[in-house]
Image 1 (cartoon, rainbow, N blue to C red):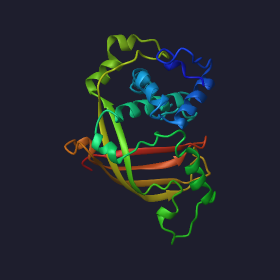
Image 2 (tube, one colour):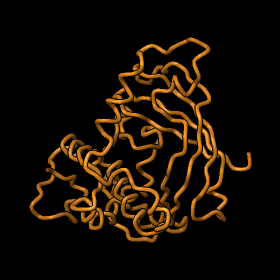
Image 3 (tube, rainbow, N blue to C red):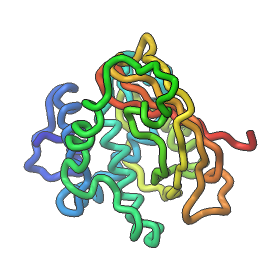
Image 4 (cartoon, rainbow, N blue to C red):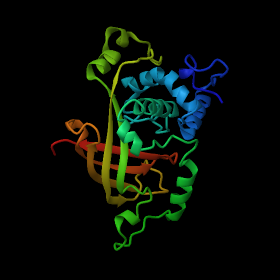
Length: 260
């Protein structure tokens, strides 16, 4: 299988990098769907995470064109699978370094190849009609095609703000050529395992720039840290929405609410 050129320097020499962007995107998408297993994927995560970190923490990748998320820098709202793969590698690597008690209770979703990719879509999506049910007596959670309500496990990684600033705005960083990936980094990250308790608050038809197959579902709830209860940034209210992009990918948007 081809690998993205971003990781070719750290990967094995018998892999031929994809020669064009679409090839790299397809390669990264397949890796994302496959997951980071405890075998070959785990070793790849160990060797490539410095390059993945450089991709994830490069603030040039988050603009109005990308809607500040893992989308391509052309305003199309197509998923940037190389960016998603980088995020997955960082989360997979970092989640194995801390909070062992939590990991004893929580098994990351990328443990087995293609886990949840096809069965979950097949189980959930066909049950729901294309049009939004308008009957007022149907509970919101039963009209929710994404099955949002409940308790979710969330992993959050972030750099110290001084490291993040230096990586993006030092003299060397400012002079870095546009479009060129930054050098790999091995700075320490802070890691939080968080539990979200959320429920559906509103369901509305898809908007102009959404996929009309499914509605937009809004939610709210609470967010609390499992291991670092002292951290006020990890214990907040939370609200957001879930929708489909025009490509048919599920898009989560969340807003953390501090002190109201």
